[in-house]
Length: 269
Ligand SMILES: [Zn+2]
Image (cartoon, rainbow, N blue to C red; front, top):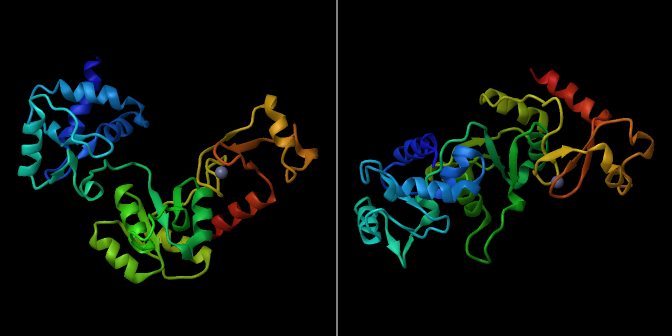
């Protein structure tokens, strides 16, 4: 194994505060941008030369299962118990509340149902933004406000809401939150600027405004996927750049709508 990788993994492990756990996948995501390296992280953690001092007992599986330990699993459970973490059936109880996530350099958002337009704008600006209506809620288990706050905490997203009660209860649960006070989307964007959230239109579109997934450029060899969409003017095919959403297949191009948005953004500052 690459020694550098091991050192970086153990450096991150040192950042996990007592009373919290993180997952092999979360460390992998922080280091490589993807959870695929989770197994490699597991191997690096297993070779930790200083157990307890480098608190690798705070790294568990993505479903909350305590997983393995260099000493033995009972010792791992005891160390976690001593830090106030309860284990039930081999899993961390209250896993979502106990999960520690490393800070992301990029800001990510979750918005309440009053802020659909703002969500669209944030996605066009390139921000990963989940709209409340898209958060799955377990049947009868919790109301939407709770679900939004829990989701924001788990994913370390900034909650944008017009509801002061939701803002207050989310903050109590450690969620970073901006309470939006105006109704029009341009005014709302100005509020975000005042909270030091940068609003810069990327030179090319990067995110689907419908579903929040990443979009990619359509290759010249893929003209057929453009022809399938009735909303793409055939006269433009072959003459312009197009982008396609990797999840929902929506096609984007830089047209008059895009230019209008750029102008409106320019007027905000
Ligand atoms: Zn999409």
